Image (cartoon, rainbow, N blue to C red; front, side, top):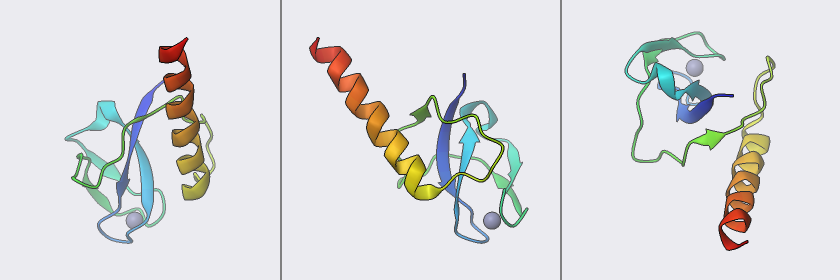
Length: 80
Ligand SMILES: [Zn+2]
């Protein structure tokens, strides 16, 4: 299990998921292979917990859905 956040690649502009353990370190874009420093920015969404451990490129829309599902399940846990 790992905690990840999404960041837009400064080179190609596509969203990529980065593990929070890599914050402040140089990472490579999964799409264009450009290297940049992983960092949280102002447009950052809440970290996505339990992101699918898949080796394929994450679909931005599905990643969004996963984030919403995670939020709703957390809300339900709080209420119960
Ligand atoms: Zn890129």
